[in-house]
Each structure stands twice: as structure tokens, then as C-alpha cells.
Length: 330
Image (tube, rainbow, N blue to C red; front, side):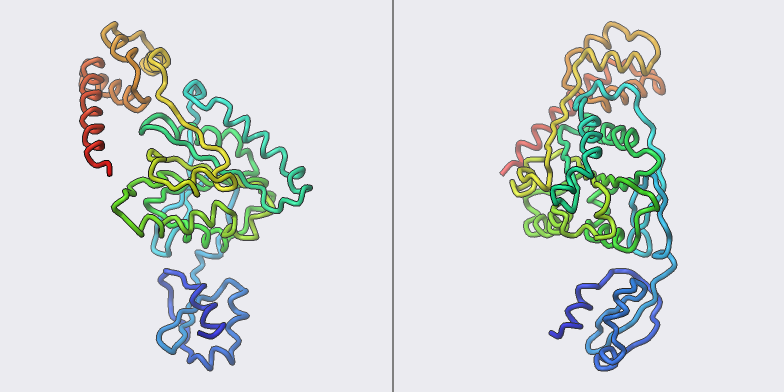
């Protein structure tokens, strides 16, 4: 395979665009299409011995502004959608209290770290714990507290978005003018992945490892500090090269279930009134997530279901799920 063909294969994008021209390989060489790759305006795809030149849509010309974005699929691959994340005032009571301060300290050391010859100032943080324990809430709070007027954040779910597509997305956009920090939130790491996926699990991690290592982070973003947050409910599914490798995930934090007393305080704050004694006794047993308690409160408001009865049903269902998972263990 020729050098040009290798470059074309490497630059392939799964994006639908309008065909501009079709070249033979010889015509492509004579047209010096390699130079056009540097402009970021043209896409090329090999079809047999033909090379098709595509026009990029205006989508790729959009300029980003500082703020928070969700990354979602669209007709061109993926796109950014501005989001507004509300702070949960009492959330610092529920595990990993010092994470925000640690990230703040890290960001303040950007220039000092670069003085040691570090050209990519990056931190990776993996949060794991049972579903509903508040991992995403804590990350949202941390990002929104620290993003300020000059930061930018992107949030994506691995079940919906390829990390490779996301790095392409960054490569075709420059940071907003004056941007001084980048947060990337990757939710549901390993979300639906199970051991029976075989090679699909390893394949899905190739782009992730390259991104966490910093190898695939585009050069136009490397002058600002980058913090990568990830969440997972299934840390046991990952190899040590992912979860026990500083430089990829530098910190691995477990988020525990809140204590019974903390959940009671949350529930009474939510309801703006004291809880019935039956509800307090049931919640005080612990081993519940914030999500469980919140849903029990909502059912009480909407359907007048007793809080303690709903939580008892939830506990019973949790046991069913645990037993079913035990049967699936290899």
C-alpha cells in the first residue's frame, strides 16, 4: 500500500457528505491531495482504485464557546449540545468530599508542571460504586464549581459515542478563545460490557486507552490542563492496564452508599418535613442509594405509597438482582 493510500485510510470518517469529485489514484497524486488534508476542509475515501473527494458541511466550521456540552449522535457522526447542570447543594456529604479541592489544586499547578517538561497536563479520575450512589452528581458538581467563565466540558456515554469519534470531533475544533481548562466526562465506562463480548471489549478499549494516555488528544488542545472523569458500576470487568495504571486513571475513587442518617437528612430536606417513624427505621438500615430514596419519596407524593413499604420492595428486588448476577459469574 502506498504512503498516500495509508494516509487516506487513516483519515477515513464515517460521515455522510456530498460528493465533489472522483479521482483516479494517479490524478490524486498529481493533484497533491496530501496537502488538502492539512486544511481540514476535505475528506477522501478510497473506492477500489478511485478516490472520492467530499466537501465537509458547515458543521465543521462552527466555533465553540466556553461552557458545558453533552456529546450526542447526529447525522454527521456526533455533535455538541449546550447543557445546564444544576448544583446539588447538599451533595458534598455523600462521599469523596475532597475531590473538588484536589482538582482545583491540580489545575493551579499547570504552569509549574509544564516547567518540568510535561507538555500535556492531564489528570484521569475513575469513580466506581453501586448504581445510584451519586457518582455522576458528584462529577457534575465538581465540573460546574470549577469550570468558571473560561472552562469547557464535554460529557459523553460510551454506550452512545465512540471515543475515536470524540477525538476526531476535538481535532476539528479549536478551544474557545481564552479557554483555560478542559473537562471530559465519560459515563458508563464498560456499561453493558460483559465477558462474553470477547474481542469486542478489547476493541472498544483501544481508542479509550489512547485517549487516556494522551496519544490521541489533538495538539490544538494540549496547551490547557485536561481533567478526564469516568464512572463505572463494574470495575471488576477491566484489566489492570486500565484501572491500575497511573497516567491513565491517576485516581480510582470508590463511592459508597450514604449512611442511613445521611439519607434520612436528605429525605427530610427533600420533603421539607420530618419523615414518619416507619420510614426512618427502614431508611436507617442503610445499603440504599440516593436514587432509591428519591424514587420512594416521589412515589409517596404521586401515588401516596408508604415510603417504608416502597423501600422494602426495592430491597427485595435488589436481592433478586444480586442472585441473578451471581449465577452469571464465570
